[in-house]
Image (cartoon, rainbow, N blue to C red; front, side, top):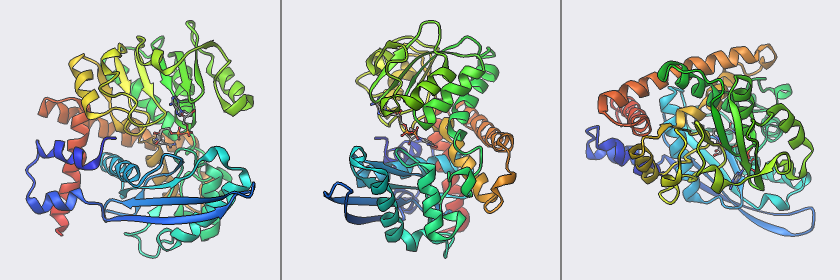
Length: 404
Ligand code: NAD
């Protein structure tokens, strides 16, 4: 996966860094590992490694909690690095951070999840309690972690500010669940309107992933007139040459096996998705989905990074050589921007309207996207590289102002 040291090396080609600055930027402030061992409802005892990385002391660490059987310390560090880039390009008062729990979620019942979240919160309590505002971690949803778990965490801790993306009836805000998908759709619409001076209406779209991010992205793009031709998920995919009816698909998925899209329309898969021609291709599932192995197959004109780190460094070079545009991580920053809004309104979440959250996302996302576009013109590079350089430049400005 695209690691922070790798991104720093890219930025260092454009910015002069002293040896000390390079070292300070390269190494995370904290890597924490805690092991949980507990009994599942079925009687099996599981050993569960957990990890947390906080990149620096710019503010409290912010980045979601990933629960997945493939979670490793390296993955958590890389994802924290991506959050660091995202927090800098959105100018939010947070350090990049990420937490991970390595467990096979297919084994877990609701009771097991309750136990897991309780044990995780117990062990990370000293960091979750906002005693020292700089060095603590504010958690949020990521792959397989859900708003009700965030609600549980703030209840255990007795503090609304320990977690964001909580249930709206439990200290969260109404605009948080759709925030990332709204941001992905919003930046795509902006790109067509302001950069290409074209309408989004009728543009064809292929999406990988139909979880939180993929489903809301599809829903907004559908509402705004785009034609969603294909959607894949972990279990397969669907295709409709006339365009998928997304509201109907959402109803279907609620009741389907594994909440999958499979069976709603003609069968489809990732290989077809990454080799067919769409106006917009949206990886919204996992990292490292577009690599040097499949980048040359891609015929879509624009790729919007809805997932964290879906395109590798080598792949972005190939895509750029093949004249395929990429909207980088700023595309999926709607969630962390909304999380900041949630924290600013902690304790009074009921007054927040979805429109207020979306206006805040739009303002932060688009003004910073313009900065990325301007830097890419100045450096004569693509948006993917310009985003990395801008983020590191902003981090360096803080470092130089404060010293170390
Ligand atoms: P999720 O768990 O809600 O959904 C993930 C989706 O991807 C599911 O539909 C799953 O079936 C699908 N999927 C998994 N493996 C797949 C595969 N091999 N092929 C096709 N589909 C596959 O997760 P999410 O919250 O939607 O997050 C998706 C991505 O977006 C992750 O990279 C996450 O880090 C990133 N992200 C999430 C948020 C957020 O607010 N949730 C914010 C920014 C970035």
